[in-house]
Length: 219
Length: 219
Image 1 (cartoon, helix red, strand yellow):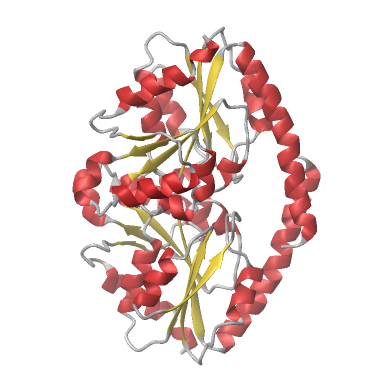
Image 2 (cartoon, each protein chain N blue to C red):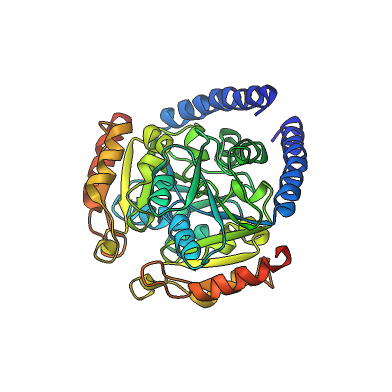
């Protein structure tokens, strides 16, 4: 790859990471704990988000949905009573700080709460862009296979927690849990890994307990 | 996004599409039908490739494996006796024509055959880059969910065929086939959609029949 393209990419990172820090500062001041939800297409990001949000009780919850096109998930979330806002990137493969900055201005954030930002379904690019979050959570799923940490290490490196979704499909799929966990540990030795099922709700109490503990510095 | 960045991206497309046409010309002259295999992480691209290759009989087969990191799939393919070559992009989210150009020089292509290029697992970026292929095949999977054509239309638009993998998981998953097919048809009215299972081998005879027909202009 030519040198000048690498330089342009570096500029992009630098510019948006400064803005990301400003967004993070603002959200921290407002005590809005912000979670950047990463994962491949179809890992179950929205379903996981709904399971978590439903267990957060009286905490004020906001959701920003990132998609190339469509507002399927935002409509689903709004129908469930969540304050949800849509970003359509029309081709761009990740959310970035300017997109978040633009939409946050439109949200009436109170004082305190949690903001979930569901990134574009893509196990590669979104991991490389800061968008103002306090935490990145990586959603994987059993049918994706146990080799993902080896093939897509950057997302696992950058995440603060891994949620392995669709645990209910384990009996029907040749998923090697030890191989998966070894791969995660190889790139990120201390990261918690939660196994969950959105179908049965299994595993989410542990996720939410951990999330509340992680966000307690803001309360 | 700043204007100058868009211009740089346009340049990337222009430069690599010229090289892609040159690669395509060379492969056509050598009667190597070349398939660019797209799909999200864990859709089953390598497993589909193996099922297809195993049914191609005496046709000469070559595989280029694209991954961010690791050579898991290349080793798997080599162990099965396929001529396989690895590209590691170390972070780059798609294969491009210069990468293919560099590796094709190392492959002893005969006269006639099929070359499968498995792109990076990513339902977004790889669809936008020509790499010298005659055909793009998009691998989806049942557990990814039936809303993918609505959320990731570009990949469905650019593909010449869709293979819906992991059909065997239908009984355990809430997958709406009509909704999926309507979404595919909305962006690509004439594309064939094959439902397959790598676990049972179901559906692959139709895929291979179609592929042989599509590539017959080279024989």
